[in-house]
Length: 135
Image (cartoon, rainbow, N blue to C red; front, side):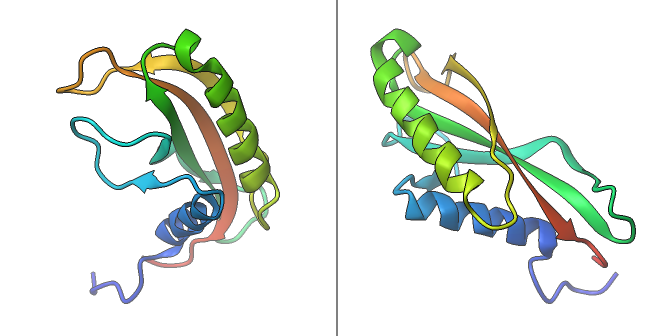
């Protein structure tokens, strides 16, 4: 295996998603530990992460899970902000070229090590198509 010259198409999809969220004024956390400023998003591989696109050849469906964090505390204290954030992010991702309108699960309480109580979060699954020809 040779050294990779670029980040590759899967991480390029992640970079696109970071840019979409940045344009919507939703910062993306690179690492999660302890307390952090909300609202924010955490990106994780979706499930399935990469799958067939039905287009043949090297085209693959790539999914990223966007954990959208509204604030500290349970859903009842953050429901208005959470719904506003979900609407904003669904519109931002859904209107971006090549991305489908995300599906949304939640809100739920997310526990973070070192933080008492937890945070209200919703999970969105964003999906796009990428040409994965080589590693």
